[in-house]
Length: 79
Image (cartoon, rainbow, N blue to C red; front, side, top):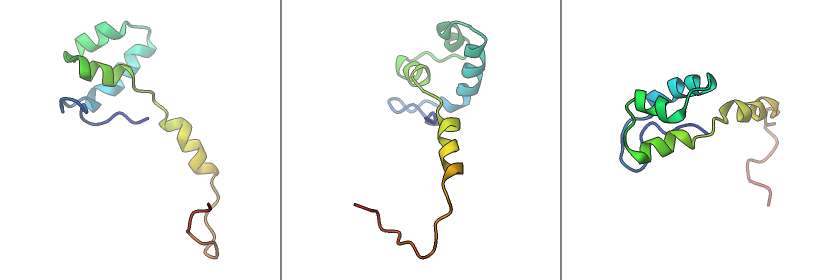
């Protein structure tokens, strides 16, 4: 979805590397070499970046399709 700012395991800053990783991956470069160039050494951080799926653009479509809520509707969830 959205890459966390820091690695969940070690706390290392990883969000600043995502755009560069995604751009170079789109060019067909090897993920291992990209992460080595970005100086991502720890396997937990590498795993966080490699396994991230960028879905924010796909989910944003649904927000645009939602109709504005009418004031007469209750805000309680339907069970």
